[in-house]
Image 1 (tube, helix red, strand yellow):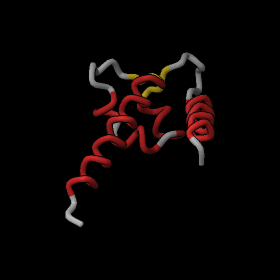
Image 2: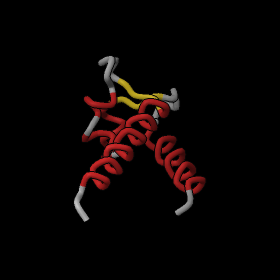
Image 3: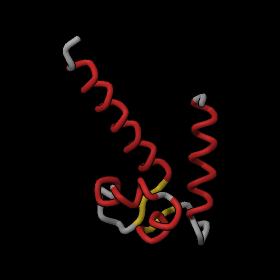
Image 4: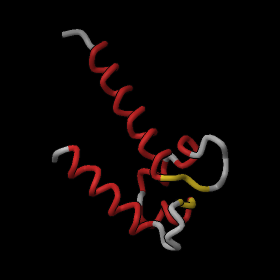
Length: 77
């Protein structure tokens, strides 16, 4: 999957989960449509607003990716 395809898939999943189309996901909306986001909702919602945005979720995924890369670099060959 290309980066463009991944972004498109993410946008579609977010839109499907965002039941009231306000551009935010509550914990309940995440539970029904984005289980990964639901499982880590507390990490993503750092300001404890009760909702997360596409930007916040994207930043969280980016951080997870960087952490995974760092762990792989630390492994001995």
